[in-house]
Length: 276
Ligand SMILES: C[S@@+](CC[C@H](N)C(=O)[O-])C[C@H]1O[C@@H](n2cnc3c(N)ncnc32)[C@H](O)[C@@H]1O
Image (cartoon, rainbow, N blue to C red; front, side):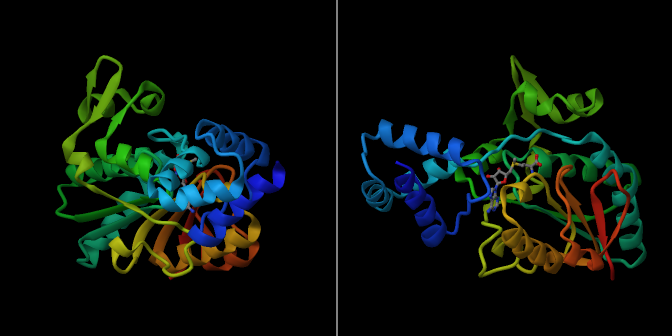
């Protein structure tokens, strides 16, 4: 029954801070019904009691309800711009001011495809320019199961199909149908659980103080209603360094009230530069 399913969403929101209100209800309902049927649980209150008695169930449910599709170098043009324009400019500026630290945050990182793509690009740039940079890449998500997969760094074809052949050969070992990421790139990314709508903090605690040069928040905002999107944008602005760079997804627009904080790099890259 609909109100049964809605009370589970309400519990997830009120007690655990997960917001699925902008998702397609029919799909959420089907997933929750399948799960409760599998557990032979008949009503919402019994399921909520079950979640409270079995903390692992919350992790399983969040894994079922979140949409984690991603791939390396998704939206190739955006990554080309980051590689050819944003990173070289950032590195040149930092070298000039002797601030040899580069800080990146991937907000909803799925299985790590996005932060690892950035790690590969940073490694390529640093290698080419023979720079000695301290690189900190933080990658966060609310889905504990995919964070574990991200740490393992093993992928299938659909996740790597946009990688250039040279990079694929350099950074992956190919075994049958799996693509295993090189330990060097894996070591560059620090994965942790973080709910971006959590009102208590504005950056992941592991990152200590934010101050990110580059923040990627792509294909995540679309799952939130306008009011929650504003909370997220407020955090993103606070988390960025002066002149930091924010990358959004192809279908995501910056709310009008936040536009004054950024100059848009261009119309096609979905890249916004924070005014200093
Ligand atoms: C569709 S994937 C996008 C992955 C990647 N950013 C990309 O563009 O390819 C959205 C990710 O956001 C995560 N997510 C959803 N709600 C979140 C929240 N409140 N805080 C952090 N991550 C969240 C999901 O678990 C999922 O892995």
